[in-house]
Picture (cartoon, chains in turn red, cyan):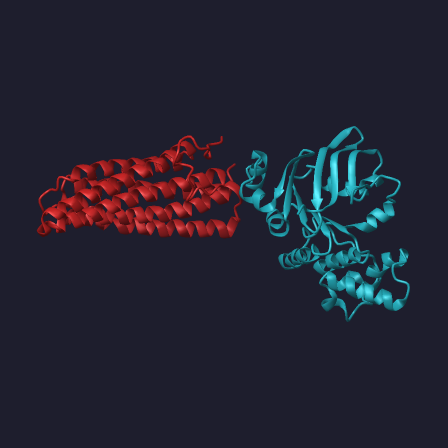
Length: 231
Length: 254
């Protein structure tokens, strides 16, 4: 029979997975609103952010309750602490979706910039990172988590490329600054989606192995020894 | 700087008749540290702790193989008399077991037999000092002639600790010392353990894993007569190496 503690931990996992799904939907919808120039989905994302925030509060309360009542240890403790941090990252991801949606509402009213092609590429990379971070968490898979961490460089490079292109474009005519400025904000938000997905992947390492891989250089080179999954 | 080893066992086997109750147990106990022994009932942790001051010798049909050393001296060697061993390696049991005598006499009894205090004033000092070390003086100093059995369970257990401390042991073995006590009395015992480790080396058997996590520097997990894992307590309770340890401490065992 499953202990009460483990029933509560399962409940916690379900709530975190629900938050993953809600945030994924918000990110996808905000990017669709931006790239396909649709206002209605953008507004949906803005309106839906509060539900994500509320779920974070609910998860924090559940964690407090579990820690106070059962004083979990070892992998249970690591999982619970990991969930607390993951929920925090998901709430921030929800905020980034809202940022993107707000900029989409503005940019949709203006002529389309040609740099949106690179923005699309960045969107694809960070959405892939986010989805891989869900897989890494739900299946506690170090290899997928490592892949997320490695992809972060790619997102950073694309962000820099977009900003460079926009600066060059602004240099041609200082009357067209408004759209590039908003697009830079969007690009930075997308880059943050990559960063926050990486944070989630790093938490997966902590949950599985109890090691802190933050700020490490393990993922910069595929040849370097890095923590790998254990059964 | 390497930590000094106060006591150790090497490849310790212990038999009750034909039954092998402990299998090749090797542990080094670092001086002035608390080591907690955890594991399910029947895993051998109490048998092990009782090997360390030869308490098991009193049971007929037992056999000990391997090495048990106190300060590098084999406790079964001729140089180590069992009475001297038990003076140096004191023990506190699960249930408080004061003698049916006064509080004073409980503490003074063993030192008197061993001739540790010759004059009355020396004995008074020894009794007071022991009760103070056990954190009991303020509660009983004014009624030393009262019967020990008039004390509460928690006070009786601290009296037993004072009684052990009166012999100025170097190692203190504690076999579930707080399992019969309420949370407040338990907290006092745990604080006392924390204080006492400055003076001596403590080895504690406990079924209460939170207690092991709170009081010990190192934790050893026993299962079916074997030492599965020993490591720093922080490590054992956050990222143990062995799956069996993790399953036991997270309640997924069996």
